[in-house]
Structures are given as structure tokens and as C-alpha cells.
Length: 283
Length: 120
Image 1 (cartoon, rainbow over the protein chains, first blue to last red):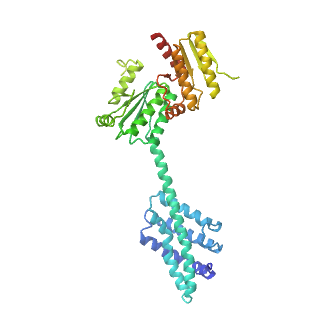
Image 2 (image 1 turned 90 degrees about the horizontal axis):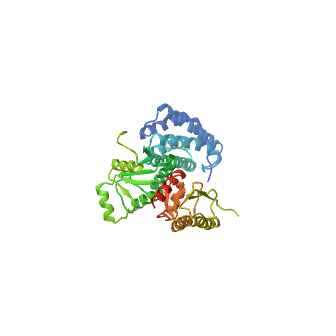
Image 3 (image 1 turned 180 degrees about the vertical axis):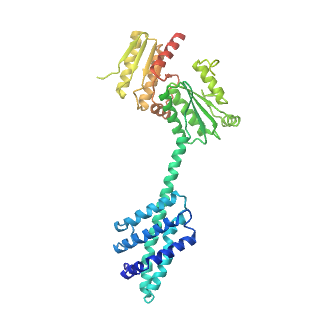
């Protein structure tokens, strides 16, 4: 495979400004410029063209993994990351590169009008290179989005397990949303840790916000309660709605020695009674 | 040979596990403890495992059997200060230690022990 000819490079350098103009127009026409300031886009296209030319001068071929293309790759990484963060879609982000193809091919066509064989060869080279950059952009874009999703998941997990102190010696954990294995593990760990930290004797797990209780959820709850008991504290489950009570009975789940209450108020009352706190005067 | 000290406080025995439990040590503790209960006719045993941050199934079973033993010898047993990680491990291993009294710390464990002994 022949490398890019020097004359191709010269042709690009010669009409760099025109190329950039046509490229911007193509981006504009496709709607890939949404949410991006024109001034920024102008800067980006100019920078990319410059980096591309620098790379081409080094003659490092169409494999963009090599050191010669590192600058370009870094530039595209940055571009793709910011695009992902402002919420641009993946195809629009990738179009940043692909929109360059049209103007570039037109340019080469005029340049190699007399040599069809050479034209095809040069087009193929350029096309390969730009495709590789386009794919690189998409890959980075995807990575950024995945990182965002992962961070959100973690935040959700953290947010969904707030352990609150209801009274001296009474902790409450209002559970909202479905309980799966990973979440119940986090719930269990944070609750047990808080019990140790605060020296609370009673923990109330409120399941009002748990949409369904199946065998798995019940098992998780039982495990948590057992672990709490092993540590020397007591546990009360509150917020058992009528439907949930029915489901538990229909499934034939044995909640064993679990203390259950229909709402948080009742659970707190029971907790205070167990602690022997006089509620009459102070509430 | 290293051994876990058993302290006497009035009519109670106090066992604090400060080192990493290994199997031999656990077996030895079991022997020592039953002997001491016999000698001192203690009414209660308090086992503090707050320094224990790792258990396996053997140690878990050992803890259960020690408290079972002392119960048979007419001494109430209270297990105090279990770490969250230990509690989770025991539950995952299926060792729920039924019938073992637990408390958050030594102070509360002592109170619980006094209550229990006073009642029986």
C-alpha cells in the first residue's frame, strides 16, 4: 500500500482555509454544531487540521495507534469527552470527523484530475485514516458515557442508604426502591457500621418504599436482621403494607423471630418502650 | 504456649480475645473456660470479640460451642462487640448463633449478664 503522496499533503496545506470553511458548512448542515459555540468549533477545526497535517508530515501511516498520531488522539479524546459531557449524541460527535471527508475528497479530485489511479489510492489512504479517527472518537465517547453511568450508579447506591438517627440509641433506615443483592449488601454494611459508631441498641428498617417483597428480598432482610442481632442490637421492620403482608403469607415466607410493625411511628414507640425511655414529658 | 486470659470479676468470667484466633487457640480456650467455670462456679461469662476482625467457619462454630458449653454449666454467656464484617461473614456462613446473647459493648454486656443472672 502506497503512502500518502507529498503532493496530497501540499494540496491540503494549499487550501487549508477553504477546506476548513467547507468542513464547517458541512457540520452546520448536518446539525452537528448544536450546543457548540461557533467560535469554539472554528478553533477546533483549525486545531484538528493543523494536528492532522503535522501527523501526515511525520508519515506514520494509517495505523493511528502509533506514537506519531498521539497528539491527534489526545485532541480527539478531549473533544469527545467534552461533547459527551454536554450531552451531544454519539453520531453527531463522530460526524465531526466524517464531515471532513466530503471537502477533502472534492479537493483531491480536483488535484488529481489527470491521474485516476493515484486519486483512488490517495482517497483510500485518507479514508482509512479518517475512519480510524472517527471510530476512535466513538470509542472515547462511549467510555466517557459509561464512566458517567457508573458514577451515577454509585451515587444512587450511596444516596439510597441513608441511616438516620431517630432517638438516642435508635437508628432508622428508610429503604426506597428495589432491593437486590448488591444493594442489600451496601445497606447491611452501612447500617452495621452506623450501629457500631453510634452504639445504638435498636435499628428500624422501614420498607414502606420497597415496591415488592419476594423470597430474595425477604432473605436479604433476614440476613441483615440476624447480623444486627449478632452484633448485640435489636431490629424492627416497619412499613409492612397490607399487600406486602399478603405476599409474604402467600409465599409462605417464614420471617421467624422478626419483629414487624405496620408503620414507623409504631416501631419507634416500641423501640422507646424497649429502651425504657419515658416519652410522656419530652415529646 | 500462648493462651487467652480469662479474668474473674465477682461471679462473672471475662474473656477478651485480643489476638488473631487460630484453631489451636480456640480449642484451648474452650478447655480453659470450662475448667475455670467449674473451679469458680461462675454464674456468667462475657466474651469480648471486639478486636476480632476475621472469622472462619471453624472459629464461628467454636464461638457457638463455647457459649453452648457454658450454658450447660449453668453460666449465662454474652457475646459482645462483634464487628460488622464478622457479623456479615457469620450470617453468610449460615452461623446465626441461635440462643447466644449478644450486646454492643462490654458495659451493656455486663448489664445484660446481671439481668439474666438476677432473673434465673
